[in-house]
Length: 383
Image (cartoon, rainbow, N blue to C red; front, side):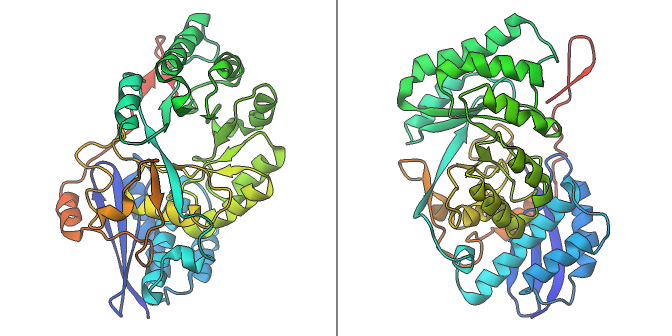
């Protein structure tokens, strides 16, 4: 079997799909994308495609090393996301060729179903309680929301009080019946993170995500030492090499690599094992589409330390399309009354793409960009 073609499809809301075709008619799907930089990743995929045409898709490990090491310059959001989508598609081909789900090729199931959580509140957190109550009626009991809007390097007590009041109101309204993570989204400086973590601890959040920007990772350990709240991070780290010093330093309770950003299944299985060796949980980042989610689930189902899975049904970014709009086998992704997804039964990644609908959507792709926020003084704020 040889690879003969790589085709990309940019479609709403902000997704990029990759189809890899072989000379024996077996195809694989991947989702290589950086949100807001889909065109850049798309160009990288086709540049890397020069290494793939005519090659045996079954040699995933060798092809991964070629893509990673062959260009001399390596790593980073764009290249690792391009490799991630290619890697997903190669695993999809291998599973389909052998007639088994990818998790069987990775050693088999360690669990029967995977717990997921729902996003609520949007970029500027609002209506959180109403959304939680609506999703709770569907069986979900675990949620995540953004903790703050813009926050200055050193902000006023009033800004801190506004965040705390919001979280207090959520806990009062929902009681102990739900768990929630609070995403600082890298919007919070190290000095303000220390204050916020102290003030939020009484409300027992399940975790705080990206308490500081990933380039400030050296603060994870001291912040963790100063709080009882588990800290989570990893969506903006792209390889084992980037996770290595973070895990060695300690401070994180949950690692959140993104299967569409951090080198795909091949790399993230290894990152998950590194986390397990450090007694750190796994909760893959996935505010993306169905192929990305399917890839995450394949890793979740073989990783003993996987504890939660993000998924994008109804997420505030989804305009003009939602998670399963391009999926034919929607029932396989159905969440049960505990908010969990059963092991995907179909071979490969376990997702069947509605190619006609995707092709139609790709004729008028969106140009999604994340918001650009500014502080009151006109300086750029972290989004």
